Image (cartoon, rainbow, N blue to C red; front, side):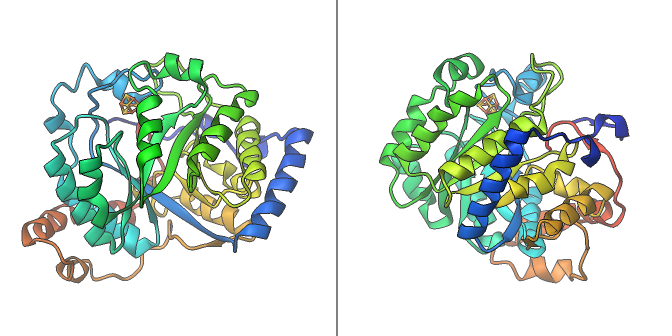
Length: 357
Ligand code: SF4
């Protein structure tokens, strides 16, 4: 993992955002539909990453593609149980929702995964969402006590774009899994900016209808150095997708990704009818100027923001860990990692995170 020094010129500023008359109109419609169908409660969704490895490793936009040559051993690139569980605890105590637990393909054995899934759910105090690729029926049964929904990272539903961008992660197995999935909520994640045209949204709409999805996460592509992508969508382009999605599906839960560089779009994401934001690097950015801006922009849209990105509350962290219903050894692992995070929360530094925002 690398970090770049904070450089203000790389960041999108609110006053630079330009919205076309067509998008203005879509925003009005989308906002009205949001207000008709939801109560304004808005949250930050946290993806908990389990690994930086992926055995597929060749999706053309993905940072794992550029890392593959460096990471040959999945076990070397894994998150420890302690840090995954600490993130789950932050989610619980800061009012973040676990967007999903995720990682690349082939990161660990299923029995190891199951242990993490179970413990994250115990720490969080609720069932969680998973985004860990196509799962067999047998594995789905094993995770059922801890998991409420399955998210599939489809990236794009446009057949020819998908074939090019994700040559070894075909749509079909996900389609099949969703056809057979019973008793779980369903969601997909899609990236805007991979080469789809606005007309291609029809493939997304068809997929949502076919599988009666409960939730969609949209991301604006964040180009990763070393891939062929050098530019993400403009705010206007991204809003076209979000608003059209909201207008077509007024009651769908829509989660909008934003990253550190473009997070001053947060107010517009609300106008577009998003229920929540995700991908903002909240642990690295807790209490920073950018985190404060994000909260402010969301609240200025009349939303009740139920997550905390800025104020470190008085918490007896050791007592919180001690009362968890998990094995002692995991509590010890959490305690070992705790200060690394708390130091960051107490001393916010404005910086850019290359891979995880
Ligand atoms: S499957 Fe997911 S993690 Fe693996 S290379 Fe593709 S996008 Fe990246």
